[in-house]
Image (tube, rainbow, N blue to C red; front, top):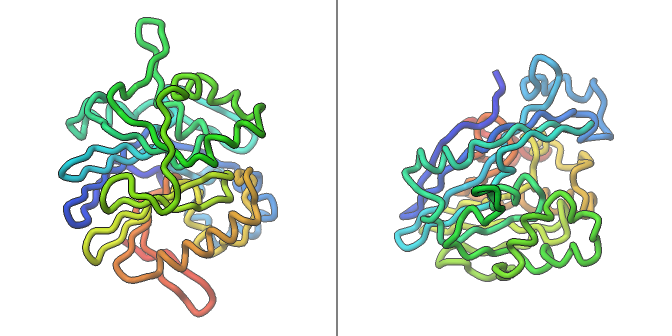
Length: 281
């Protein structure tokens, strides 16, 4: 039975990566993938719940090195959001951080793959009626292209306005090709948003790619060409980025981490004569 991913970890060299669930998402499959029909989904019924909704995960990642404790994205925070395309149910991030035996004050870097509400709004919390940054000791990093896209699209600020206001004096830019810490490099993976980023973690011969929202479902491994209505930056560029990333994920000793993929956010991909397929873990 398909379900949202649960708390889980993997290790690459001396780096430990833990998925911290914040909740789950239910997508309307033909609204999110508007060029598809119910017939297209028949081979992928295993990705849908009993009501025909596409099940998705929702959370963040804890990346621990011997010297650093890094949070990749920050979840949606304690709220419920519903639209015609999807429904989000969130609020579990901090309890799962506690499960990892950490306090918000222990986080020394927060890196945002992009600035959508389900990746950013958990970075702010209400304390005694006042809004404050959830991770008080952290440096906050994002690609400059992602931060500055709000200059051109001010209307898109509404869903993340509180977070942007508090982050503005603290935000730092980490650009493509730069290491945020040794062995953790920023990749430019635009398409979902203009400044979307992924992270490449290299540990000896092992590689882990934290993908952000390049994929919203494992079905996109077989169908990277399906138009995704959530790719508001540039849907056609998002398809190019997906295909490029599938080539990378199919390389030896490479694991992908996909925020919204159901069952497990840790994925392995193999090339096939006609494209790519998800490997069983």
